[in-house]
Length: 162
Image (cartoon, rainbow, N blue to C red):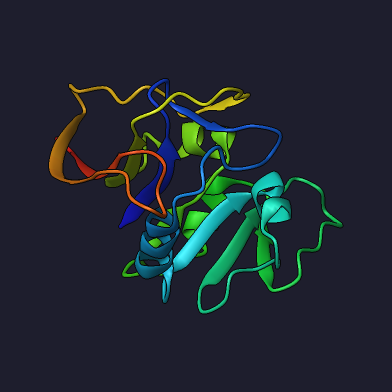
């Protein structure tokens, strides 16, 4: 199964200067719960944005066309297709970014795990591709309001391929 996991604002923005747009502790907790014990695939910039490098208790795969690229704690593949071929058939794969990797993975994905943030980022330079309703069907939605730790309301939404 190939999952895409991402947090987007109302305009499908996902980042600015290689950083997340919003700090939502429950989103980070959900990300950890879903990806722990599974395989995560990311681009080079996403790996470099991780504060402590490779994420623990997950198989980390970084996509890079540089033959000499080394990412501590991660495997490196030259393409998304090669990375997926390097996974077992029963492996749960989570695509965690960035934008170009999401764009490549969207036609291959089985499930989208989207955190829809009910806000517009003041600045954004990276966007998630449009979710085509003829291809994707909303399977579940869990809505959360603002609280002392979350300045914005948000929803955990799962889409499945039609």
